[in-house]
Image (cartoon, rainbow, N blue to C red; front, side):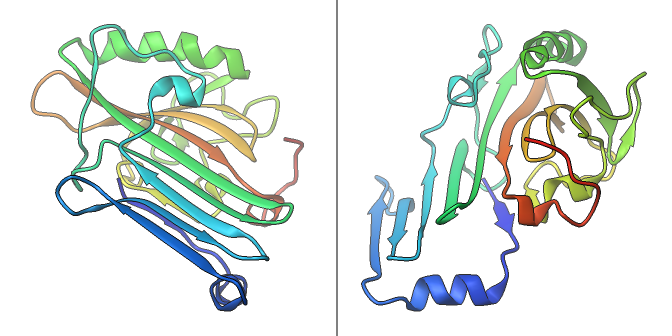
Length: 202
C-alpha cells in the first residue's frame, strides 16, 4: 500500500539526525519490511503493513468481503508520524467483494454517517447534492494536505468522504475486473497540512 507524505525536509532531517535515534525493522515471512519504527527524542515514524482492518478505522467490514492486496501487493498500511503535538496518521485497507458497486457504496454511505455529513466525489468534484460537510470537508484534494494514497489519486476516482478537514474517513472505489474493489482510509492530519485554505475545527 503506497502512502506518500510530503513533510518539510528540515523536520524530517532533524528527526533522523537526532541523538539517540533508534531504528527497528521487522521482516515478513518473505523477507519484506512489515514494521518499521524510528524513535528519537524529537518524535518518531512508525509504519505497519498488512495488520489493519476496517474496524481499526471505526468502520464495519462489508459482509462477505475479503482483504485484498493492492497493486503494490500490500493489503493494508498504517503510517504514524509524530513530533510532539504535530501528529499525522494514515490508515488504509483494501477489500474485494463479488457484490455490485452500488450495493457497496450504499452500505458505506450509511456507515460513514456516524462521522457526520457524507459527500460524494468524482475526483475533486462533488457529484451528490452536498458539496461540503458542516465541518468544512470538500472534494478538493488540498484537504488531504499533501498526503497521497495509492488508489486515491485517479482524477476520475469515486470516493465518499466524511468528517472534518483534519480527521477524514474515506471510501474509495478501485478498478476491478470482477466484483467490487474498494479502499477504506482514515486520515488524521496536523493543522499545518491544512492551513493553506480556510481553517476549520477538528
